[in-house]
Amino acid sequence: RHFGAWIDALPAVHKKIERFIMFPDHWKGDVRDMGFEFAGQGSYRTTLRPIGNPNYVIKLINDDGDSYAMNEDEVKLQGQLRGIFPKVFAHGKGAFGTKYDWIVVETVPHIILPDEVDEILSPRFPHLKNMLVDLLDKDYIDENDYRYIADKFDTIVSNVINYAANGARPWIFDKIIDKDSEIAKGIITKAFDDTIRDSPFIRSSVILVSNYNVEPQELTAGNIGIDKSGNLVIVDLSMFDDDCRRPPVIDPGETRVRSLPLEPRCMVARLATLNETI
Image (cartoon, rainbow, N blue to C red; front, top):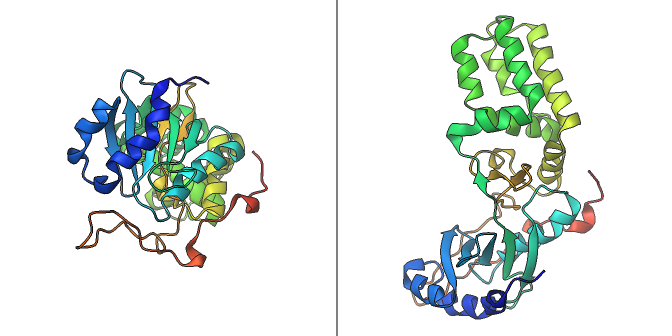
């Protein structure tokens, strides 16, 4: 794949901004002169976009600690879990000397927002959509609860993932008017089971939760999107235990961003442990 001259500039761009990477206002003009525009920033990665080329984004790590592992896992997991992440086309060394200082990723055209989860997600999970209609038609939930649940459709999907990975209790049980109705609970659990069986996205997400310490609550609006083929993909994800994630720090006497070291028990599980296929 030919990207153009901009991909050759990425090591120099990363080195240019590394010292003040957490302060984009310091360097936005510099990277624009080098052919890139600032697209966003999180605690661990900064995103740029090549000017005039909307098909790609570049994720650069913010520090010389463990942030590279997020890029590394995106590269390697896309080969193991088909279609669950945007495609990664290239990666390489930058300011910190790892092979995953930066990655080039396909642009996800649509990030799902909280106010559109019912409209976008419910057609993709018909068993869950039909479950809600069935519960309403049989008076197991009322109109208000139906609307409340539908507006949180992404959390239903997340709950299905947690149910499959960890045996979590379906939270919709709490909305049933007759709390003791085994019929209503049966409608819900069957819809969950059928969704796990039929959805590749759910099955891949279960592997992430089970093997990579991903919190199911992360797999909700804002972190999932629709790729160019219309498939659900995970846009951004941290694959570390919450207790192990340590935010980048800036020492009073330094301007360089760095991360505190991780204990060995906190390192990301390696791909050698993943032997399941979808």
